[in-house]
Image 1 (cartoon, rainbow, N blue to C red):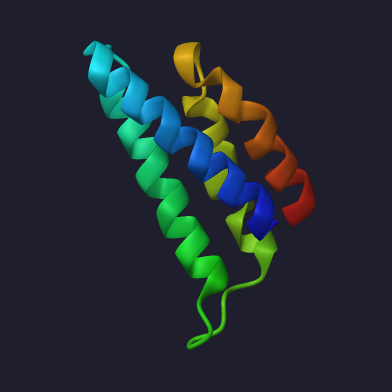
Image 2: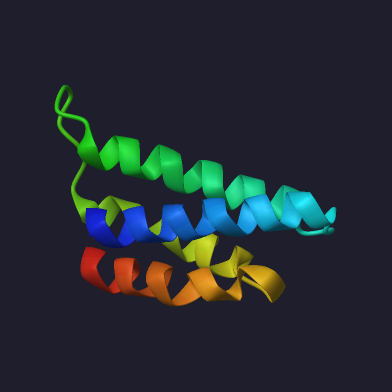
Length: 87
């Protein structure tokens, strides 16, 4: 699941950069999604304390999937895959 979250984070960063450059209205939404993925990745990779069971990330992943509209739709399949892996 960490690999899928990393891919989603990288794509979110790429989209955020594009949207910022364009002054697109979804810039704030994109920023929120990117920061949430950065936070999730850090929690998954931390050693002390150990990360929570991946199943605990399912509600957060469901919320993030809901953000993936418009320009952010490209991230949705990755988050859905992460959600499937976490269950």
